[in-house]
Length: 182
Image 1: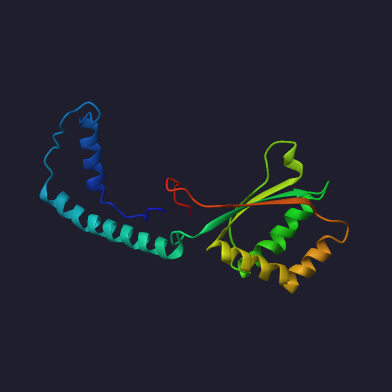
Image 2: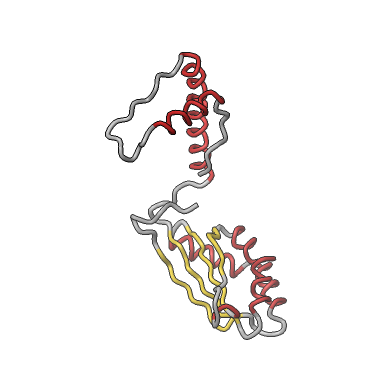
């Protein structure tokens, strides 16, 4: 979550720098902060209120835009082993069609990768999808496979041979210590 920009009065910024320069925060057992004049303090109150409200509003927007995954949410790791020389065609199919079809069928793309090193660099696509549950994943995949646009795209993209030799799929659940996903 990004922190919204808030204009902090120059007097407060300068005062903070003065305090910071005069204190050794790491070795001090207590820190004496020099007195602050009333004008500087009064200027800080609206800035603090705006910052507090802005952060709260931003957090609320973040929560609504990217709610935390439900406890039943599952992630699907998929590894596509492309046929010889077909990785560029496979990537183009994903870029131009497949990702949009996934979205249409409720399959949330988390991220897509290609390996950085050989031997897998030239023939592997790795990605993760998010599903509300295993049942939803099965229903989403069935709807995707039955989609007439998908059938057409697949047929056209494989006119000169299959794009994949093998597809691996592994369903995963987040651990309790996993950082929040964006």
